[in-house]
Image 1 (cartoon, one colour):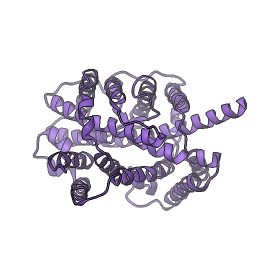
Image 2 (cartoon, rainbow, N blue to C red):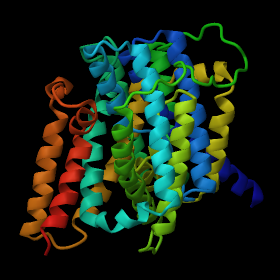
Image 3 (cartoon, rainbow, N blue to C red):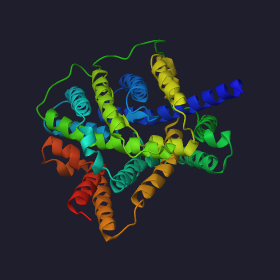
Image 4 (tube, one colour):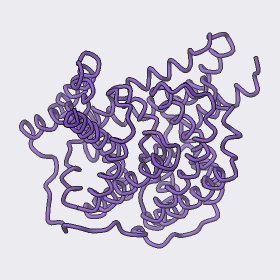
Length: 427
């Protein structure tokens, strides 16, 4: 019996580890391309990302909200990195200086989040996040990121502008394996659907198409570098951007806590303690991301999709996986090997977990009967939120930098609209 329990815990830990990894691999590559980093710089960014994701998830799981919610590179920060790169070049700021300003922005955002949590300001906005708001947030999140995942599945990343048929076929095969096992599989087949799908997809990819990356000479052991982008550079625009971003990130904390709590079947209606603690440690984690020149993390609502997909509801495998990721990040050869998971395969597994998140979005929106008021609010939020996602960043070039960061993000625009309309248009 003990051996069976140990085996189950080991497999669940590995699967959580793969999920943590798969959710962290793609975004450093995207940031590296935006800021024209070389292979060594991208590898360093990936090492620091793994390290911070592991530390941040561990801190939240043990001392923060204390739920099995992965802390991962935030979609909002990807848009902020992108906009700052574009606007910086437009105003004569080099890409290196923009990265140093981003370090400062993450640190200040962390300070604001920490203060919001300590003084319990975050709990004051908790009533704003009704099921309608969280439902819209989940749905727009899936819309925003599903495009990125689909591009990855089709091989439309980096310099590639056409569908890579071989990789795309294997990606869709992996997607349906993960989805099929999670729905129709029994016992361990269902529980380890993500792990099995990635393993099969990775092996088939290497056999049929070869390895995507060659692992060169790297040192055996190294600690993540502090201020790898250079010493933080202060700019006045950092303060309003950090403050507004911190306020918006509280909604991410709330949505993730509610989503995972619902998925775990926890009978709770008062999340104030979890939200306050989660906000405090989100602040600490943002500060760490700035100091280690990584990408700032937030609690990922996709964790609810992963838990729903695999049925893994125990917290300790998640804790063990976070510790394992921290340890792995200290060994560059292992980081290089793990990073060689083919992008189409990793993206396919993540896309499969989003199916559960879509269900959670629909469930929240329809929790109460949809009348004319609710349908109108949801419709307006969806139309403008999704519409914004199709606008090029350059259209906001005439606005101040902090407004550019906000207005170019469809997830934030749609969530803000549903919050405002629901507060102004009372039943």
